[in-house]
Image (cartoon, rainbow, N blue to C red):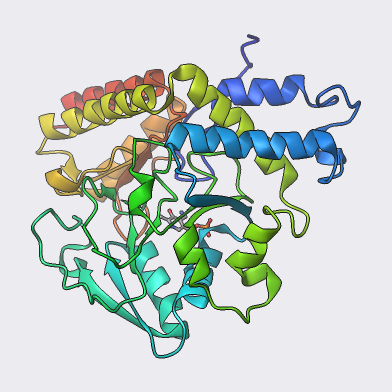
Length: 366
Ligand code: PMP
């Protein structure tokens, strides 16, 4: 392994840090992918080398997430934002209803798009506490048994909250935006009718969106849609209806291989829990200085959010963090303060560097 000259501790919310091993593999294969004498960006998406790569990425994702054969895997473009539209466009239909659990700004956006296509209904929201928690087991959700689907956001990137137990929606398909925690922990995929995620947090670079759709949900999709917006068309063509984002798929393969080499989701989960635990420990150790935004029962392992009582202090904290190569920590404007995004590829070492900074800053300023 060649150590690069300068790598910062990158806490960006997405696009985000990628595993060094995945980047190094890309560098090694940059000019000559699979002995073709071309980079992967320069070859036909119909070539046998690219088709093998495409299949390998699908196979690795299926293996790591234990995606059952009942579910199709799609590699699309347009980000999670296009899925806010494609989900209702395909599944809702005029006169039909869908229930949305609104746990943050991205869920709100999804709901707004849903409303363009049918009777999308908000059945839960924690707006009055600025989305500091998600529903807990036992909370009433009043799901309409006739709804076409129930939509939720598994991890709320901006507010730093995450579902720990997914609700039982009976026969109503569960649809989840997993953009910011896909592949970070084991999930029983069989319980979901559809999962989607932009790749740029846990899976690879931006430009690729992963969609996992169950066969019966696919069968219920609207039939008269244009080809680029129809899940049916993408399934029929194995995501190769038009030119796919070939380099992003290549990087996804590298990232998935890295996850597999680490020991798959059990190892990744343990790593992620340890990293989040270290951060929440230091937040809780200095309550007079740091205020965690998320309620303890809803704390995310992916995005850790906190504020300070004083804006001048926040500025000093951020500047001092920058001096230590800790970057991307400024919180989203709707929460303020700080957000440390600690996706799969953030090494424990980076989290330790941040925790050291938080501890020493607190000891000097508390
Ligand atoms: N959903 C969630 C949970 C997100 O975090 C984001 C992006 N940060 C989006 C949706 C929007 O994703 P995209 O930019 O890929 O459209």
